[in-house]
Image 1 (cartoon, rainbow, N blue to C red):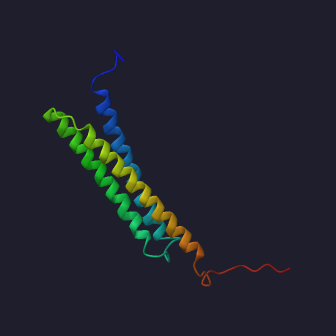
Image 2: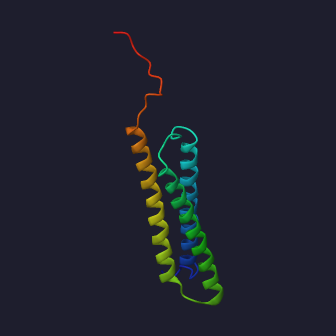
Image 3: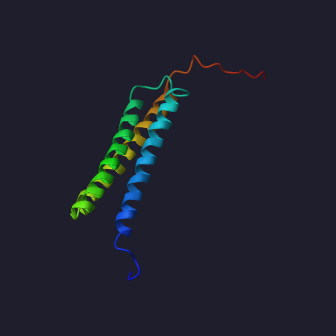
Length: 121
């Protein structure tokens, strides 16, 4: 560990927040795309997924800002960043769960409006 820069942990933590924010926005985008296509009749719970994903991205942005401010102020914010990381991961999980629940509920719904091709015996 002697050759490791003292800045490396901060850089890695910042990259982690960037990646979590990107994954969050990707999840929100996927959800909105699905709502506009195959899940257009899904229950309203699907919008919770978008909210959770966007909140996770906002938590990551806030954490990154706090990390930078902590560096400028010379303050150790590892504990705060650990909690914000956990919050972001939890919100991503909640978004994924809400999206999965919406897909499940949509699959159990009445699909009488969907044209079914009948095959002759």
